Structure formats: C-alpha cells, structure tokens
Image 1 (cartoon, rainbow, N blue to C red):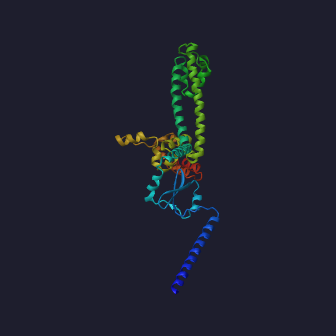
Image 2 (tube, helix red, strand yellow):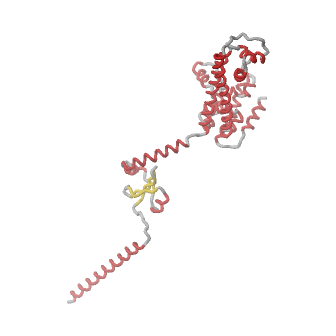
Image 3 (cartoon, rainbow, N blue to C red):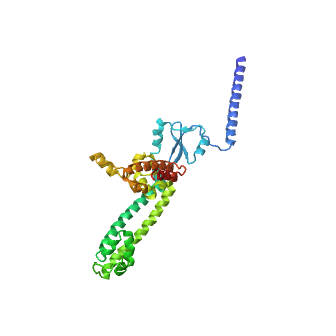
Length: 341
C-alpha cells in the first residue's frame, strides 16, 4: 500500500514538472513573438565586398544575404568579420553562378565609363597642346616655303629682301607686284608675268597660311594658361613653350619632378646622347634648354655651366609644382639672371 502511494506521488510530481516546463516554454515563445520584428543573424559571421555590394556568409561559408549599405549589415551582425584569406575560394565559388553575370557586366561597364571620364589630366592637355603647336609650326613652315618659292617665279624681289615668312605672307596677300616693288624702292622686277588664274591658287594658299598663323597664336595663349595654372614655377623659369616640351618629354609632371637635374638638362637631346654612347662622339650639353634666352645670350664656353644651373632650378621648381608648394619660380629665375649677367 505504501509503495502504491509513493508511485502515485511520483507520477503527480512528474506531471507538475511537465506542466511547468511547457508553461514557461510557452511564455518564452510568447515573449519573443510579442517583441518588435528584429531579424538577428546569429549564425552569420563573414562579410565579403565586391562591385555588386556587401555580402554576408554564415559559419559554413554559405550565402546569407546582401546589402549595398555596409552600416546596415554591421548593425544586423555585430560579430561579423572579413573572410579569412584561405577561405576566399569558397566565397568566389558562389559568384560563379550565371545569375550574377549580367550584374557583373553592367557594373563593370559603369565603372569603366567613370574611369574614362576621370582619366584626362592637365599633363595630357599640355601634351596635346604642345604637340599640336609643333605640328602647326611644321605645317606652316612647309606651306609657307612652298608658297614663297612659287611666288618667286612672279616676284623674286619679295623673298630676297624679306626673310621672315610671317612678314612675307601678309604682303603677298594684300599687295600686287607694283605695290611690292614700290614698298621695296625698286623700279622693276625680273620675275615672269603670270595670269590672274595662275596667281589665284598662290593667294588662296597664302590666305590659309595666314589663318594658321592666327590659330598658332591662339594655341600658344591656351598653352600658356595651362602651364601657369598647372606648373607656374617651371613656367616662370623656362617660359610656357620650353616647360611644356620638358613636361611632354618626361611624360608627366610627376615624372619630371623625379628626374635629377642632369636628366632634365639633356631632355630633347636623346639622339645625340645615344650617338655619344655608341660612337664616342661629343656628349651633348643640353636639349630643349638651348632655346632658353639665358642660354642664347651666354658665351659658348660657359653655355654648359648655364645649362647645368638652369636644369638645377627647373628640378627644384618641378618638385614644388608637383607637391603644390609656395611659388618660388620668380625668385629662382632672378637668381639665375643675377648669376649670369
């Protein structure tokens, strides 16, 4: 009888325990259900970022979800961390799926367009401007010499008395043979008599050359503005044309700032330098710097010394321009002028 009572009591205790267990479990689930809907990813551990956005993977490196905003992911998964380098292959396998191909293609096209839009720099603008100037000068000289030679069959006295093509072309356009002879204080010409139909193409080409001269001056003004804006210290020492040639030959202002003064001194004289190295001919003393007024005014025996000093100041100015330092170009130029008076 006693044993039977004990069994009954034990059964009742088990029933009470089961009841309490299920009761508290129900309360816990109810409490979670009544809380605001906040998704918590306890198993999410790793964040991977590529051009499509930020992606979250769980402990087994299985894809969980994605979001463009990294801060949103960090709020949801406070314990998230970057992918270990040795597990990156597992993540990349996920993006080999063909469903991502279109998204990758569109995103890469967009990024390429953005990079192409930002690729143009002042270095490239100056390079194109100085190259255009050199091409214009070559074209003008070729055409002007051809027209002057052609016109010399009609009036040779013009080219005999005036050497500068830039002065000859306007006279050729605006004056006939008698007017030209009067300006030159000559009574007659030994040139042939040409018909109006034969003179017309000469005048027409001369007009085009005159327009090219105007275009050349416009391009020189533009180049000077670019140089003053981008590398004012180099421009103050060398002028816009020589400075642009040095910049073009170096490739960029960055490269020019890295060159020692000895390299800057010989920029533009590469052929002569390699001829010296190959055949033992005389070594060049300067390249583009031979166009500098200071070098042109100097005596021949000190031109090498002037070129070295000039290249030294240009090397300093290039570094200041590249690192956007204070203007010192005028000071450097005046010190050179004072040294080689």
